[in-house]
Amino acid sequence: MKTKTLKKNKVNVVTLGCSKNLVDSEVLMGQLKANKFEVEHEGHGDDHQIVIINTCGFVDNAKQESIDTILRYVKAKKEGAVEKLYVTGCLSERYKKDLEKEIPEVDAYFGTSELPKILKTLKADYKHELVGERLLTTPFHYAYFKISEGCDRPCSFCAIPLMRGKHLSVPIDELMLRAKTLAAKGVKELLLIAQDLTYYGLDIYKKRELANLIDKLSDTEGIDWIRLHYAFPSGFPMEVLKIMKAKNNICNYLDMPLQHITDNMLSSMRRGITKQKTIDLVNKIRDTVPGIALRTTLIAGYPGETEKDHEEMLQWVQETKFERLGIFTYSHEENTHAHLLKDDVSEKIKRKRADAVMAIQQEISMQLNKEKIGKNYKTLFDRKEGDYFIGRTEFDSPDVDNEVLVKANNDTYIRIGDFENVRITDASDFDLYGELIKP
Image 1: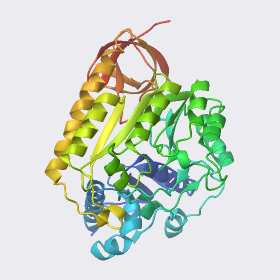
Image 2 (image 1 turned 45 degrees about the vertical axis):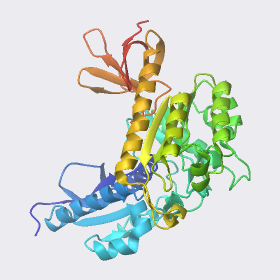
Image 3 (image 1 turned 60 degrees about the vertical axis):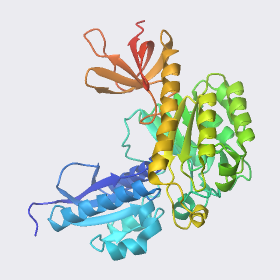
Image 4 (image 1 turned 180 degrees about the vertical axis):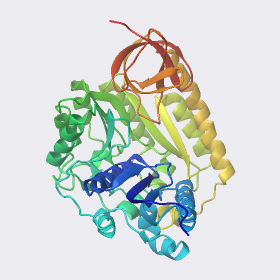
């Protein structure tokens, strides 16, 4: 029974998972707005007629979060706080039949590439003319910029190709138009994302075109920073680094998930690279772009990982001193190649090994941050929180990396979305503290 009046055509879009999902939600919201829907992203009100949940199906924790979110809104629907509930995204793509059976209260489930079908269900038209149009959910001055969909890599642990399909690059001309559209809205930073940036162009141009793409994007008026996320190490196109070095608005930053370092783990993971080639690649990147910030991601507890493998990874992390590093515990995903292997590392040991890696990284980050004290950095300010204005240097991506905190006082006013020069005065493990350098 309804207990309140729900606003007709008011939609709440809830996004779970990665930045690629976030872009999908923003495109969906842009289409809905063009169809005269009132749209909120993760709205806290309870007057939405329609809720659309964009789910993640990547690893166990993400899948559980998606299921819990669906069940929460099923409860709201039963209580009359929601009229229609739809589910889209990776979990829905991967487990649609199971979800329809287990949670039939959802009005419809959609896959990752069924935006037109969602709109048709809502009696909305798909607006083909809205190239690059999105309702940004990030602060107005930066935007995630998806250059391709899907993945052709054979990594044994990854279910992304099952949910997102084969690699499909967006043509350069279309990306240029999208970048200009975002810049016209005030976006200053593009965060390039894909399942694999370095594969860009192979499907439609028959050659790797990431270097050419970022070269062209860097000429977009109003774009001050371009940041590269999710590069694959095997076959890395070194010409990208030459463009990075030549163009001032391409950040000296590279996110390149390496996953592990021992030869037997890399082989079992089907990464197409060896320990020595990985080490040589990291060294070559740093030699080509001195001062670059390298972010990587690792996996702890992959099937067959021994204490020797773990110790070798610890030593490598200690020696390599990545500027940024994160680590996941292995998730045993059905229908992946690794699912044929025995998941023989306990959850307790997985967590212990991950914690050991992060303990080393915490010390490295502290050391690197202390070295920044007394130096000046161009800083982009994202928000004000409590007594501090909070920003980032070119070496830091939103949400996952270090932040620069500047005390807000009577002499200090910073406009959100502006660049300022900051002198670093203090440092902690994962944050920097500074003061404005006044002109």
